[in-house]
Length: 123
Image (tube, rainbow, N blue to C red):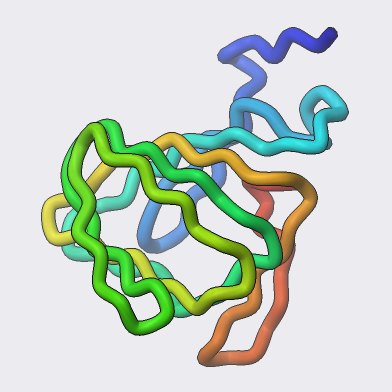
């Protein structure tokens, strides 16, 4: 059993959001990652695909998710299961907070640049 104290949560900031990692392989040896996303207002993440399924539960605000060409509108209290390997892009006009879980490690393929990375909040 691992206890990850709030003071040990890992914070990663990008131009669009702040991710706070609560559990990951690097923080307790789990095959799952759990993190919080706080996306700023009027922002959009990159168009990308993940190689693992993700589960997003929205706590505050609203988001629009383009999932393989289908536009999904989500609000506080909604949960979205994002399948692996489908193109996605998340945006928000008013900002949102969500808690996300996925298998770890996982990688993201940026569909515009072609780059593949292991997001630091998942490792």
